Length: 334
Image (cartoon, rainbow, N blue to C red; front, side, top):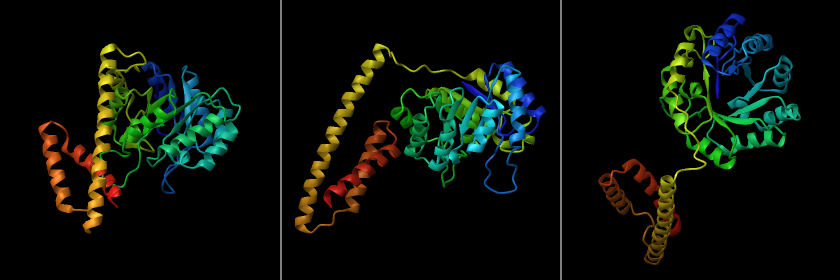
């Protein structure tokens, strides 16, 4: 599934131009922002409701379904009245249960619309799951999630850090629900979009939402992250769809069985290690020795990192893992 189109619907000519290009590529769904939530007042916040017929006409006249973001009951009612086929819930809205519940109340009983829910701004799987559960309870059967990355406060090459483990958790909790990736918002930079799009497909996502504009340099919003139709065509030519291995081959099953056995052994060994740490804690308590011994901890880190390097394992990964084990050991000794 490929959903593509401009960040914002700017004019009938602009959205028609994109739709024509997408039709030639075989893309089935045209996206376009009508209401744009912006951080600062005075920025371009979308054309609003007058742009809905431009979007619908551009898509439907070319056999494309159309999608737009909604953030209130008023948005939903206007979009449905205009004939929009796909609604998506933006990251800011997903994080507000009151708004999600209001939108659910309007959509309850509506059968001919798809709803896609973007992850919230912060990497909180429960907040994302909670929003999806509200739509499930409202009877929305054509429901999916959109992974668009997460805000962080440290420097990153991405606008929103992917944190692929979060959508993996969504798949675990709500199996079978489709998930697509929005590499445009993850990257914030058009040059990075192909890299993230390809990685998303390697991770088994069900599709992509990619911002596409006839002239990104002149876009009224998110100019830096939008592709041209030609760039999108080049990207789509490189995509490889990875099938979900519901019926994996015998070799994979054998290897997975080995992993399961090793996982059992790892847990047993960690449990044994923590039991020994508890014994040490009892001795420290009797003899009045401080629980945390910095020199001993440095010795442990040095030894396991050396061992990891010899075995071709990332020392950063090992030190992080042992930091968690050490924290648990300290708790046992307190």
